[in-house]
Image (tube, rainbow over the protein chains, first blue to last red):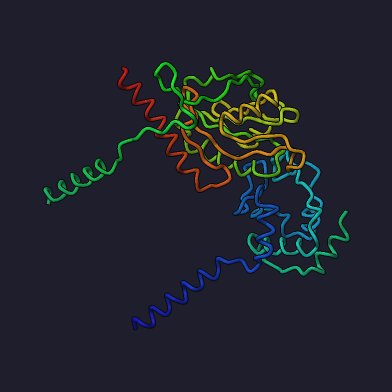
Length: 129
Length: 211
């Protein structure tokens, strides 16, 4: 009985440990290098200056790749409040890198999660306005 | 039963009292030199800057306060938002302490006008009577940063045009540097908050004994 209990606990612990690691490690590294200074490690943003990612409508949208690559030039709006900052463009990122970041961000903060392939992202990037 | 309860209560109080460490004084950071046999501690430089309400503020405005300072600029794409987040944590943590102020010096006066700083501060959702955003002569501010042990210089190759470190520095009523944290490392913030409380309580203790 005790053995069964300990195995159960061990499996639970393993599950918890396994869940902490994002499967998109490359995306996480790119996020740390390009996005984290503003959007923070936990995606919480900064007050009304930098929008949080976790509650953002943009991260799951089809045009997310365009925002990442080209930035946002207009005033960023969030609910009824506005944010004075614009988001800079990250034009140096390749489609592969954009796909990695999108998958990491969506996997971390957007449900339901759907993985995007490099081809998906390339198609979106080609149709950016 | 009653005796048992009171014994437990007594022991708990005893534990709390004995566990409270004696507040040790914070060190004076920077070089100390002797003048006429008296120790002179490092002081931050003089400033005369506009705040977010276009009011000129100088060192004299802080002679009755202790404050934490950082150097930043609003269009900074690199470390500033992270430092601002830690400053915001400090701002919220010391809400009830009227002795403590916060000061953010802009190193980019060309873009950071008082009105722009006001919008920035509003968006941060801060108390304008406790946290001042100051802007003034650029070269004077870059030099001033050195006296706060913050590295700040203009660099066309750096993101946003300025290269600077993200230290948050604690200054006492006499302008001495007493503690600091790395604004880019959230793990160093709790210790700075402890130091702010320690320094603040030392001043209130002095006031109590003086009365």
